[in-house]
Image 1 (cartoon, helix red, strand yellow):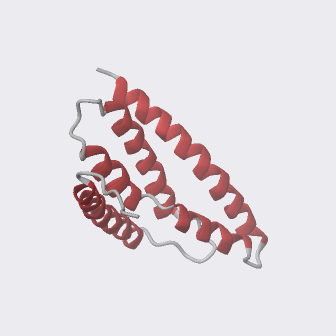
Image 2 (tube, helix red, strand yellow; image 1 turned 90 degrees about the horizontal axis):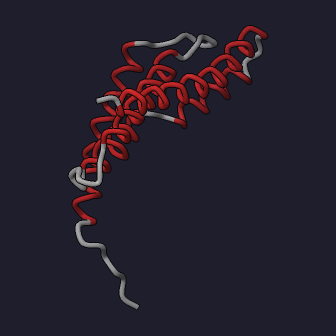
Length: 133
């Protein structure tokens, strides 16, 4: 059985990988710039995910069928996929939930639900801003 390779697939994978490098480095830089203490609110991850969702909303509202075919994979999947981080969000929440202090539980629930609410609001706002002419 022969495998069918999509034309242009290596180019798509290349731009996704390049964008992922850029987005991951930006996320790392933000985390280094805004560290949080154990049991503290993970502001860097929160800001990363919320601003990433805002940017995704704007991007997808602005892209058209006439946009360059590598733009969405580079910016959306690559840069913004590398920048936003569900895994760190989950790990931060887990660490807060398993801490032995009641105050950490309050932070965990505020972080868990606050991130989801703020990210959805940001994506919606981004889409609205992106559609404005």
